[in-house]
Amino acid sequence: MTDRHVFSDDDLSLYIDGEAPQALVQAVEEALDSDQPLATRLDALKASQGQFADLYADVLKVAPPPLAIPVTKPAAVAGWQTGLVGLAAGIALAVGVIWTRTDNSPPGWKAAVASYQALYVTETLAGVDAAQPATDEKLADLSAVLGLDLTQLPPVDGLNYKRAQQLGFRGKPLGQITFLNVDGGPVALCIIPTTKADSPEITAETLEGLAAFSWIDNGYGVLLIGPQDDDNLRGAAERFRTALKDV
Amino acid sequence: MIRQARSVLHYLWNTCGGKTIRIFGKKDSRQAVEQGLPVCFARLWRFCVALTGQRDLADDLAQMTCLRALEKSAQFTPGTHLDRWLFVMARRLWLNELRKNSVRAAAGFAHMEDTDVADQKPATETNIFAREVFAKVNELPEAQRVTALLVFVEGYKYAEAADILDIPIGTVMSRISSARKALAAQLEEATGTDS
Image 1 (cartoon, rainbow over the protein chains, first blue to last red):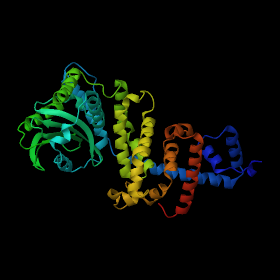
Image 2 (cartoon, rainbow over the protein chains, first blue to last red; image 1 turned 30 degrees about the vertical axis):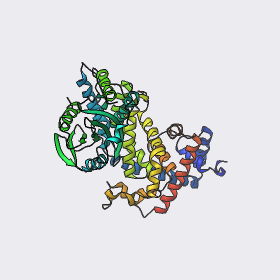
Image 3 (cartoon, helix red, strand yellow; image 1 turned 90 degrees about the horizontal axis):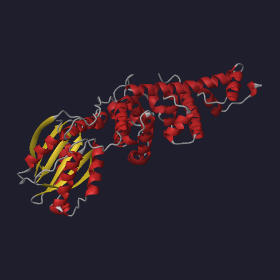
Image 4 (cartoon, rainbow over the protein chains, first blue to last red; image 1 turned 90 degrees about the vertical axis):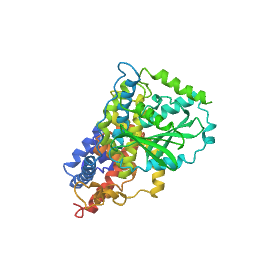
């Protein structure tokens, strides 16, 4: 009886995957006793699946390795420093896994930011109303994207916060927080994840005619950029660096 | 206005100064995601390879998925399957945010050996992406390829694969059946030519 049973490809697929109802299982197994073409057909289907599985097993072997991921510590004793420690752990996690293998980005992001920032004038930001709910939400969103709690940033004398927004550079999230200084000059604090070696000392340079202070710490490249005649910028960079630093 | 802006930062500073802000949701969920990501990452990346058909896109998608997983970690229920949660997330990101642009940019799927510049060394056992047989396998339509990965490689039952892909179980069945038939035809055609 069973040697006349015509099994569809769907039937055989269900059988191979152990998804067939008992009646179908029984019918196939009975037919296999006497139906050599059926056995050959089944073997071919299994072989093709095996090749696919073998190839994708090899794919797993060349998967990019994630970095060791520090675990976020529960908020411990006291003080905002503790928060930053947890934050640092969170950062390494958020970006650690992620940028390990593909992050070979040249320092071009600073030049890109400088070019963008050079287009800013006072009026660009003067009309921005940093309403609290929206600000809070935006900072939290940006923090989540970067894995870095920017809501912990301290206020810095001489810089009046205007807005935070997410930009991107070569597929990476680039956080930009903009301020106006006391003279109305646009200033931006930009942060991008990187796997480059830490370079925690502040590097001062001129980019696109703007004063730029940058460093790499804890897996993030940071750039504070603003008008060259703003003498307070270096101090502001120090303040941000301290706040972001693993304390 | 300036005073208002500064007061925002002062407010944040003062209210958040004494403790870690829970911007990521529940602690347990966050920790479960943090601890599970390194374990699942390779398989997530492989899922992304099957989904996108291209290594560089898989890199991007896996990265995006990790970021999104951390961002949404509060929605993860500890004790459930993180891998499946990540697969679902990766698939949504692919369909909603990456796929359209990628296909447009590439004018359709290209074979891996055409796009994977980093791997254009002589084929070796370790250079899976440059192997002709792998390119042939990846000629399977995206839907069949990713379903086949879940069932043939990951070992999911049809019902589980249907959940991950958000499709009816009957669709899983037909995709698997079609994939098997196509792969068998490829293998038959290639017999004696691939090693």
